[in-house]
Amino acid sequence: MRRLLPTALSVALVAASPATAQDYSTRVARILKATPLIDGHNDWAEALREKAPETRWTLDLAELPSGVDGYDTDLARLKRSGLGGQFWSVWVSPDLPGHEQVIQTLEQIDLVRAIVARHPDRFALARTAADVRRAHKAGRIASMIGVEGGGQIDGNLSVLRSYAALGAGYLTLTHARTIEWADSATDDPKHGGLTDFGRQVVRELNRLGMLVDLSHVSPDTMRDAIAESKAPVIFSHSGARALNDHPRNVPDDVLRLLLANGGVVMVDYALPYVSDAYRRWAADSAAEKTRLNAPPYAGLDIGQPEKAKADYAAWLAAHPAPEVTLSQVADHIEHVARVAGHDHVGIGSDFDGVGGQLPTGLKDVSTYPALLAELMRRGWSDANIAKLAGGNVLRVMEAAEREAARQAAAAPAP
Image (cartoon, rainbow, N blue to C red; front, side):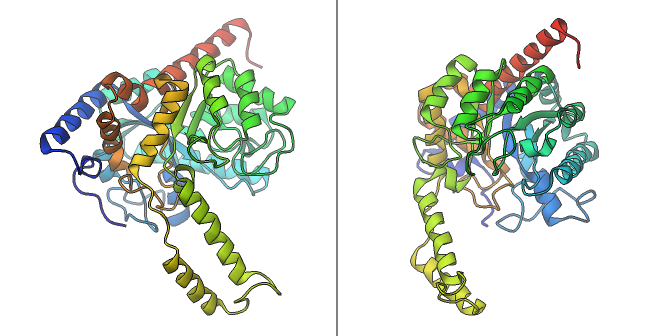
């Protein structure tokens, strides 16, 4: 992967005059000094677990390799990012047995906390909006934790409460698989949304002050969770389905529900969620692999791995992947703002969760300012940029905290 130019704004401002570019840069810096830029989703911990399993606890994080086989995040690039707060995802495979998901989730939480402890000058653990503001004021990245899959509680609210005690700030109700109590967006539905236990999970998240995260869930699960939740919900990393009909994206009718709920869609950078053309190309690419390698009697190259590899490379050369750009991510942000309002949109990059497959102009954590500058170029005010960057998420966190406090005052904990 190409390394970014020293100034992240340069990608988004190729067509702008130097004076205009400098103006955007000054505006971005002023906004991010006052409002922490909060990303809803980064899988750095899981990437470290996968790529450096034995050394992840002690690995020098200053400058890591970039690109498809490397990382989107390191300390050097974070220093250029303008980032003020990060929900670090603790993801484990939804295909694991439930008890193993719990064990690996605890390991991932431990890793996030260890990274923060190793670099107290760069990071500070945060659980509340006030924690985020304190860390930002001190010049540190507020580090929050998001558990990315309801299967990771193994059907047990005590496990959920334990994650909260360790600092987890949100639970994504499903990942890629439908679970016993909630339907996923990318699996066959079994429940028509949430079961009674699923609704109980939402209520417990409200009681704990944890955010209900609806990325990865089916539209019916989205609607059920919004109806059940007494606090605003989030989508930690999702796009707009009206622009790209990917099942992971959010339909307009759900966006409109956020007006009353108060929630936020944090827009994802993953190529299949951003670009309809890329989504279709990816489906065709997968189909070609199957065509070449399918079991008898369909596969053209079955039993001939080198020929299959060569034939697939030839197909790729004849069918290059469509380019996906920063501008298309900005389109998703603008659509959410147009349908739900500027109070209901944020940023949820999915850095280090997509194998380096990222839009042109948004190749690593140093590029947040370029996205904000693009929206400024489109006419966004400083006030609305501040809401997008982190103001909306802080408002949601505060609302969740107030609901938890209200419930605590009304009834004792179980």
